[in-house]
Length: 130
Image: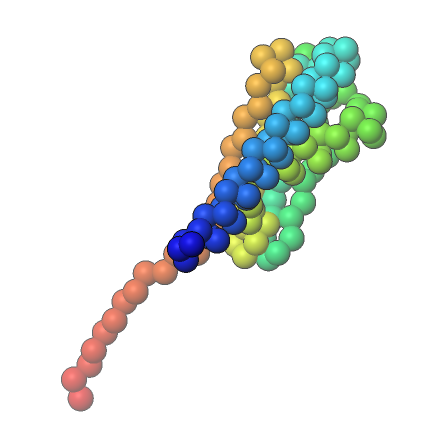
């Protein structure tokens, strides 16, 4: 047994968990799309913003012919839980990240526009002869 095997096993387990989570999210989204299609919803958007070790997701905005459609609480919660599970790890930490998730019901397509916040430093040094 080499020293790299335990790390490999950890990453292998993490990768498996990520794939299972993605499969579960896809199944939830398929179920949500069926319900949204019955409501004749075209698009659902969910904005999110996180920093300083916390983050929030706004309630989904569902549109039919560019007009808002009120969603039942259960469907609203399903969309929020699924959206959060699809965000990259650490989106809420430190400087955090923000973005928008767009669910196109007719195309059965989810698009996530994600923006990481990054602190950047520019080093400058000056020396004075005295």
